[in-house]
Image 1: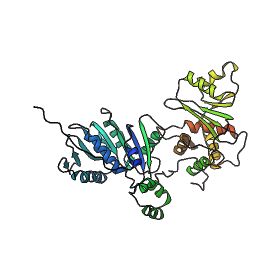
Image 2 (image 1 turned 90 degrees about the vertical axis):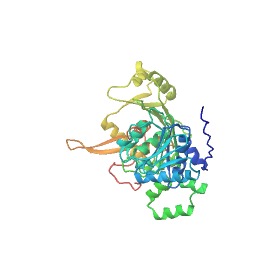
Image 3 (image 1 turned 30 degrees about the vertical axis):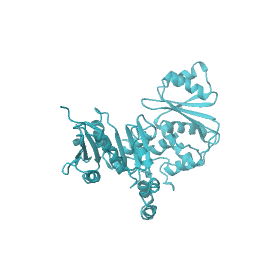
Image 4 (image 1 turned 60 degrees about the vertical axis):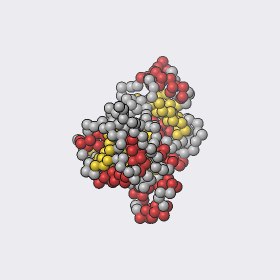
Length: 417
C-alpha cells in the first residue's frame, strides 16, 4: 500500500522587491554585495529553505559562514522561524542541522577548516559574509556542487578588493554566463522600512568614511594597489560626454579566455565607442576592418607578431593601421602615461565594463635579483584587463598629438588617495 503523499502548505515570508530580485534570480550563481542590515541573510535563509523544501531524503543543503559562531547565528535564526510551524522539523543543536519533513537536511557550517568541506554532494549552498571566508573554503564548496549542479548564493558586506568574493562579484557584474549580480545598500533597506535613516546617519557620524562606505553603501575601499586612483577614475567618468566621433582606434586582441577590445577616442579624449567580443581570427579581422574603416588604428602585437595585424596589412592594404609592440618596458610606459591622463582628469570614460576593469586593475612593485625595481601591471587573477590595455594604447597615441603637463610618477602621492 502506497503511503499518502506529503502535503506542506508554505507561504514565503515578505521580502522587499530589490531583496527578492537579488536573491531569487534564476541564475545558478548570484553575487550580492550588500550593506549591513539590508536583509541579505534573512532573504538567503528563505531561499535556501525553499530549495531544501523541494529536496529528497538525504539531500544536503549548506549554509557556510566564516566562523562557527556566525554559522550558529544562522542556525538559530532559521530554527526560531521554523519552530512557529510546530513539530514538522527536527533540530540537532550539536551539529547545527535542520531536517525537513521531506528528509532533506540544511547544515550550518564553518569555513575555518576548508579540508573538512570536501566530499559531500550539495544541492544548494549559501556562502555568508563571503569576503571573510577563506578562498580555500570557496574552492571546496564549489567542488561539492559539481555532481548536483546546484545553485549558489554568495553574500556579504564589501571588504576591500583583494579577496575572491570581490573578484566573483566583478565577473557576475560583467555578465559572465549563468551569473547574476546585485547590490543592496542602506537606501534599499530604509525605503523598505527595515532600517531607520536616523540609525544610518548616526553610523555615518561615528564611523570612518571608508568603513561607512563599505558597510552601508557596499563600496569597496581602495586596497592601495590601483595605479590610477579610484577617485581619479570617478572624476573621468563624471567628465565623460557621449556623442563624439572616433578619431583614433586602439585594439587589444584576445588571447586564451580574454576578449578582443577596441577603444575609440574622439578629439576631446572621450572614449566614444567600445567594441568587445570573442571571435575566430578570420572573423576578428573582418569585424575590425569593418568597424575601423578609414580611421587611424593601432593594434597591439607581441614579439611573435599577430596573425590579425599581418592579414590586415598584407600587400600594403589598410595603411591606416599600425602595430604597437608590447614588451615589459613598453607596457610600463603606457600604463604610467595612462595614469597621468586619468589623474589629471583629461580622459572622459563611460561607466560600465571599462570602468570596472580600471577599478580592479593592480600594480605591484618588486625588486629583481640584480637590485632593479620593476613595476608589474595586470588585472587580478581570473579577471580581464583587455579594456585597460586598449585604452592605454589609445592614450599613448593620443598624447603624441596633445602633450600632457608634467607626467605623474607612480610613487608620487596623490591627494585623491
